[in-house]
Image 1 (cartoon, rainbow over the protein chains, first blue to last red):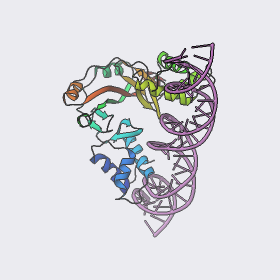
Image 2 (image 1 turned 90 degrees about the vertical axis):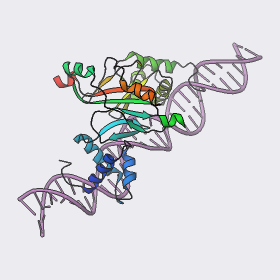
Image 3 (image 1 turned 180 degrees about the vertical axis):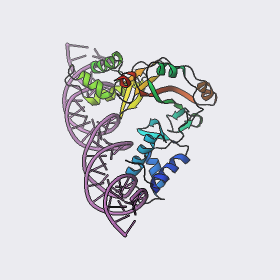
Image 4 (image 1 turned 90 degrees about the horizontal axis):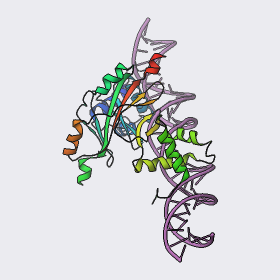
Length: 127
Length: 127
DNA sequence: TTAAAAACAGTAATCATTCCTGTTTTCTGT
DNA sequence: ACAGAAAACAGGAATGATTACTGTTTTTAA
């Protein structure tokens, strides 16, 4: 079984993901940590992110420019992805949809919901 | 400029995408067509799908098992992705969200919205 | 303290997607 | 209909994110 031993690297990886609002990619997390933890391996970041996903400690927000972007805020909320600067913004939690009731009544088991808006953010359209 | 010349392969590719409800991947489209069009190249399928996206003729529904899944129904509707069989189901159109007004008022330009539920479909939970 | 399990580094492999080059098809004006 | 230019294509190479593998190190529990 995996994920049951303490690991300082795992802690550092999770902390990095939890402390940012950037909705990071694996590479971003690795870049943030590699100075602090010189012998960190990118594979370790990927392996631990996969574990966090299984444990429900992070969610996948979207794939932006070919990279998977994640979030340690697993409460129900939507996101905005800027197609110009690739920033991901948090939005208020999306309201309970009548679709959810209907799916459940029809024998579909909903594990998670993902609401993403794509467009150009204020910063990009102003500059 | 690209996308302004007639191409029988392009037609066939679009037709294949438009006629299925499977929300196909590029590879699926290629597999469907390669008997009918023996010298079709997978790169051509990818290139034309990229063009259809630019033209707004297809949308990206989700990334399932590492493959991008698309839809030629570009009207506003949500999807359900089964994590067991990797099927993608169409759902009724998702209601206009108050989030959209708020974003627009704050200077964000929304180009598209993507609502995806993940879980286990009826077929998989029954079998 | 010690041996088994888990985690890791480093690197190789995988696989979807994109890029490149030479060839073929389509279009436009004559 | 024809020629040249632009667009599309095949086929294969390249890219790049992610995963798998192997030998080593760390953690755990008795």
